[in-house]
Length: 141
Image (cartoon, rainbow, N blue to C red; front, side, top):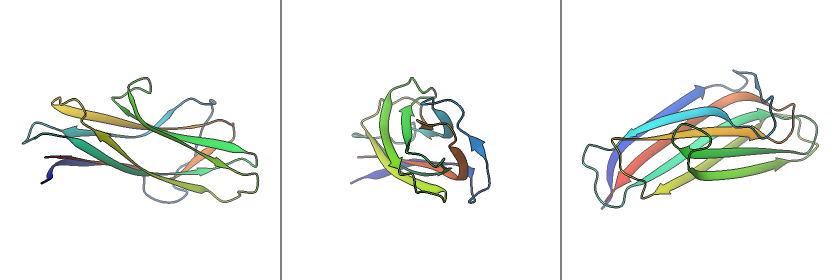
């Protein structure tokens, strides 16, 4: 039976249109969430982490791809455990809400597991507008 170990939330922007952070460098990850999960209290076999999150982006009137990447660590060069790209058409005018869920099975057990979520764009003119959140829950057997 699964056992709950820890859960954390990173809430960068709670409301729609509450921020205006331009993505100024092509295909370069910008941090939007980070969590640390404590593993020292009762961790058993088969640890696994489940993630979910949301990023809202105002896009330029062009074909654009937005990539969400989650790494185990704090730098965009750390081991990637999830990456997905959403491509939007030329006719999109309203901010686009991108939601995701991901998992990390059998991560290495250290006193704390840190995960960082990044967003990037393949076209200039994309602006992060909110809401933005990143959540993780650690379970084991």
